[in-house]
Amino acid sequence: MKIALGTDHRGVVVANSLVNHLRAEGHEVDILGECNTTSIDYPDVAFLVGRAVSERQADRGILICGTGIGMCIAANKLTGIRAAMAQDELSAQLSRTHNDANVLCLSADLIGQTLAKRVVDVWTKTQFEGGRHQRRLNKIAAIERGEDPGAIKA
Image (cartoon, rainbow, N blue to C red; front, side):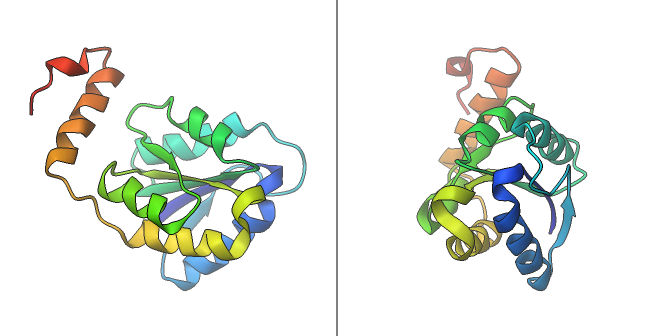
């Protein structure tokens, strides 16, 4: 899987750990933006990773900042992005099975390197269930187009 990965200054240690881990698992990882401890505005990085996924230059994206919240908010502004925060394996699994999340947002401050690896492993290996969940994704796409999601029946 090709993964676009980005971080702000607070997530550098976790990001570097994940890059090595993901590559060892056989994934291709592109680091987008600066990956150093110089202060950076998270929306800049969220845009780069979100755009790469939206334009299909990457299969999925991973964003890391202090809390994960800012990255998630910013990434979800791009069309076609379904960014989800995950702080444990269950939230990572559900973000994929129910929401087909294509961008994972992580908190470097709250989960650290070891848990981040476990969360990413679950997230990269879990497939979307489809079924009733596809109808909900269709409604999200309708919202992106400025349409009333209540009009979507299937």
